Length: 234
Image (cartoon, rainbow, N blue to C red; front, side, top):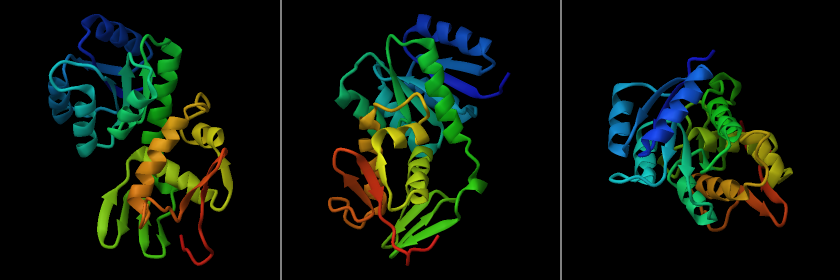
């Protein structure tokens, strides 16, 4: 049994009921909402560890709900979508989601996404380095924030895990699949669009000039390399 609290948000009552039954049987504490507006209200009233959030809903869309939830919380967010186009998945990640599952989905696939997201969200802050200074770019892992030229930006849990992995493996060429499996879990490996979105997000937050990255550089046809000089301190 576990006490992780999950909020299922979908306008299909039958799917909400099925997910509640399945997840409750596995020990999760489950609540549900039929609209984004109701979901945000429940989030203000209760604490949840993860949201399963449908992309296509009447009223406040799933993407809008995701953005609103992410602006106020570090909660794990897995999007549910009937669309399998890369641009739709990227839009979900850009909105702040940690991952997505395409409908119709296999229950085991959904559970893998849930568990991977919960593992990241509950990672021990004590295991992280305190801070890192990259020639004026100050990164606080404990406070999950970056300061560039006096501008402070917070990192999401997934962004933090990805950056931490890059720092630990600084100056090494890292293949896409190795990064995905290390950060998102062993069930990942082919979702290169995940990396592209989150790398772009990190670049916007830590690079003085995101269009000409100095720290997170692309290794053509392979993956990425985090460039850190000896003078950089952790």
